Image (cartoon, rainbow, N blue to C red):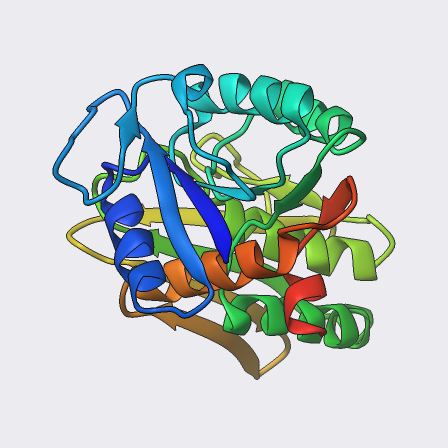
Length: 252
């Protein structure tokens, strides 16, 4: 039995993850950590990681960037594997993740879905062909009106997939309101839309002469991300220290 601790268990994603694990054989939520300290979750909930008494095999994190520092310190000191799903991490936090991975298994992915990870693989294959043929690249992402970071981590990961495949030749442009010049061929535009209850839409647009190719991914529920996180936790439990991502889980 894999004992899972949910960090940020009282949030929307925490509840979805808990419900999904409850229906899965061979896994159970042994505890949760959240400042809300809701004791109606069906498992013990603590305000601090240090207070957890249960044996934990792996942590699933759906908290926030500001809470991640404490989580990383805990995983480094205890060697507990962690599936890191919080977005909007600073460059300093990202560097810290790398440090912690020397002491604990860390799985970090901008998006936990099979579709997005497959899309990143496809982008790595087609981007050099299209950009060399003169296609411009633009990414448009859309999310609900409660999302605080922009652009999304997924949009940046998609851009990174394109840029890596093309020899890191592109400059990311997030705002053109103060630019009074034609588009440079080395630009990669990333635009963010916020509104309503959009779970997560991402379009990668290759705009060429007289033709446009658009690769799109639409998320229709948060269950998509929870399912990926649970699969990642099942994979990560018992793994040696190091950095992992969803391509390791789904064998892309």
